[in-house]
Length: 288
Image (cartoon, rainbow, N blue to C red):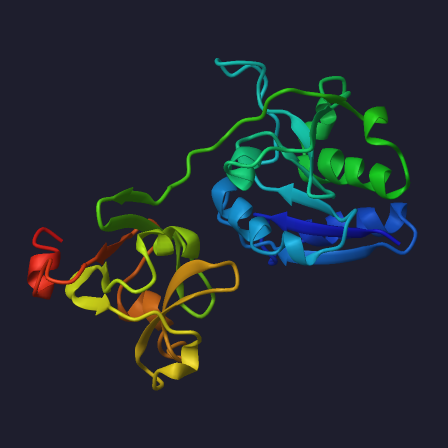
């Protein structure tokens, strides 16, 4: 039995995901298929990378992850040899995707163990329709059935890197962004716990977003340490700063995203205030 995960931008209202699973079930003996998400925004490889990066460490060695987002190859679009299906081996797991920038965003500053371009792509132009099924799933099926990577792909020295927002630091300041709004309306940022603590763990700080009266100056260990309906900031299971409303997501409200108007790419600022540096919240962010 092999484990294969699926991450796509295909949604769940159509037959597309069922077709992917049917292909796997017809070709592999007793596969274990895990849906990570099929609700990635169309062509948004950065969001796909975020979803995979948030959970791949929970899977066992040898897991094969198929990322069917912006999966159609591009041939010679002006600055190189195009965007072709590829296989990444990293931390004892396989990641199969079109080389459209996903691998660079997923790896960030890390280096792959191995990287291959999938062979025999150009000789099958009919496969460009339903690329996730005909190219990516087809390759995953071969690996699940014991075919060696070198039999279906050739080593390659580089991969593309899509644009993605990165938290930046200045003296006593971190400027980050909301990178994802989850189904509870929680705003997840690209400010990591490690980056947050580089200025020290006992220095007063203020987290600011949207308006002057929207701020938090405490990091909580969990949601329920504040009363229901109160704003809360914490580091989630992936050690990323998250802004939420405790029990704020109901049938009529959408958590922090709706109550604060937070959206993907909104700026989140953290300013550290060593003793005696500044006095009032207006002084902290005069141009916010």
